[in-house]
Length: 462
Image (cartoon, rainbow, N blue to C red; front, side, top):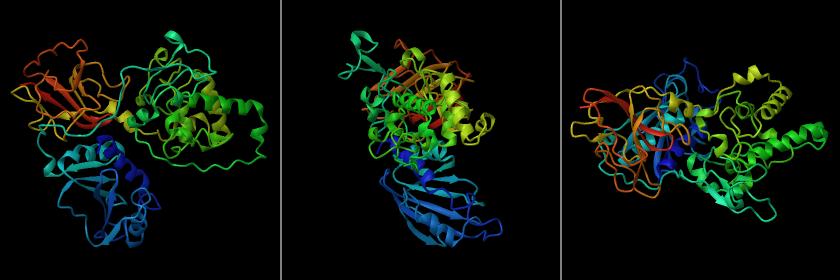
């Protein structure tokens, strides 16, 4: 399986199962501290068994039965009371929440090549703490992972659809960044000018229908000014890559959470948190953004939804939030959407464990299996995040990536060496990176794929 799907699997488990009714577990601290149960299910992304282990006073037989009945994509697992999870081929354990108050363990099985995917799925998406099994230790000499996330270097340029005006690019073409943060030209639909299948490789996608029921007597339908703004926001969204996941007709199996095609009042499918993110009242800049001139006039640097008119978008969002009974100040206090993207760039690395970094033979060593992105940075540099603007931070002295269709990179390569099928990104001219100064501290960052870190630590050059 790809590293992308493996991490997505952990995300879906975390989002779909969650804790039982009551958020912090079924019982309070007066419950049975010795309680234990396990729920084994098939992770259909990893194609391997997985187990959720419940421990302590936050659980009882009733709450674990309810949780196990919908543990993975609303499918049930096999529940066993009084027994912990146990796999002969265990690769790691993810602790989600407080085990004394309704938290749980996700125990993953498989071969060592899946260790890194389990780790990043746990830490980055599920917000847990990962403990790798002994089988995950050591440096993998080869990277035998399948295809990774696609990050094309060039925009997708196409002739305009019949009946549509000429594009703004050379020869009248329409050129669109094939990236989750990109937009096509205003007035056009993104999915008609770029490949949404490519875009969806860059973020986890899964269908999640939002409740929607339109009342023909709703007074908003007769408010021409309000409906004009709703339609404008819809058009802004559909000109962006957002439509690849949030317009039902552009998706493989249905819109995720909010749907621009739900109906005239589609804005009702947008949660308060998402609306606050749309307008930039909660921060989402770490999702990544293009300069306006590279994204057909759309700006996403200060708003969550790409827009050609930031004040207009914010004015609509403020009006809509007020209709829902929220002030802008209250909206700013709402939980940020997908905070792990911000956490990527705010991560402060600790010193590398023994054996990681660049060793005395000049070999780059990490743990977690094959990788698609490797950086050596100056000490104190911002941690790498997602493209197009967070993935090459100031202070990068060497950066390489594996091609999408090629094998992942195996650790043990020489510093400055370009393995077969890899692309050097820094130095951009293809020259060798500067020699590391003995005794000086540097930062090694390694990702299995976009937004999936497996090793981030500082080391002293030999």
